[in-house]
Length: 540
Image (cartoon, rainbow, N blue to C red; front, side):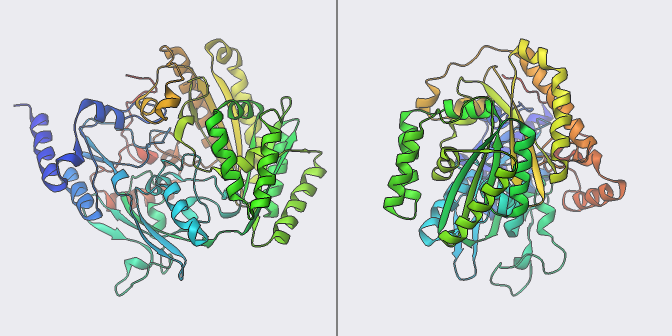
């Protein structure tokens, strides 16, 4: 008898008994699809489960670990750093997408409790009619990306210039540990507590499970704080001749605390963004712009401006800074707008039509067609978080490395775009994105709208380009570690574990040992163990 097959069959039987047959997937197609992310293919898992409630999910986790299999939590499947790609075949992926209920919206105490599979889009849609919002309220991929995945990997973008990342608004979590128990953090972790309204009575246990890439446990439920949605907003766009001046402006806008969002596109990013989409998408965006204004008259005026600007409002190879200002009154927003303009004027920036930030805010969670580029190309991003005073240094250091590969990148068809993001008033995010043509991975075939995918042609296999992208990523990741940069979406890519001071690493390892003594929770994540991923950035 094949012992491995026997154990798998026994485990699958037990999981079907616990979750129901429909919640246990073991076809090769599903196992392969769930074992690959946006960038790479992992070792094919033994099974995928889709629990529908936290009690059965936790029991399943305990049973899987007891059987000697790894447990890997998965949310929307938007990782590009190996966040949920298995390193061993004896693994089960826990797909949380079926746990997608909003459990409570408490407008009096200003919190919302949701299951881990709820998307950012779901939350935004549920809160908007109540005049409420999350502080940080989602990512570009928020139509698919989940709260559990975002909290595991450091989600950011919408309102990040003012409110930071997803981690900073969490009040408490419910997490399944490797033994099948459920731990509650925050105020919900105390006896006689009815409302999970507070995070830090004693040591911050919530923080142990945030940005952990699922290495500490499987998130089942989260309570997040709310704000009242700003009554007014305005949008600004400026252009600069070079990335360093644009970065200076971005950092100064962040320090001044006058924006909810502030980000910079390089020229190639702008070209790609403006070439994507179609007439139907444009009409949807226009309608959303009109609807999103504080009055119908203002909405019609803003919509008319968007139509007049078209897609040719940025000329030349310029770097564009886009800003969203928001507040409780028109006067407050006008003051922030004036401050932004004054900052940019000192750096000789030029104001242009504000179509990009206006369109992004009008439809913050578009369909996930951008998982592929406009010409069907693949892409994969990296990121380095540094202090604002180190922004120019990280840009220059990365540019120096990339310059070494300029000719090879051209020869193999690998291109680069860069995105800069302000994170609150104290952090600067540098995000290089590589684009290249190669065979698609399962996520590329499954995620876009069918009508959009039909317009694209899958490229031929291009292993040389993919190998170069991997080399570039490894060089940049090593550089980021060398300069002490932070990164979100740690996954199995960034050098978190090996970069820690010995005493800090010992503490993190001890915590990991306490909650996962056999090392079964997403092994390889955070770089805490000796296990190394054997997946590749290629395709099947």
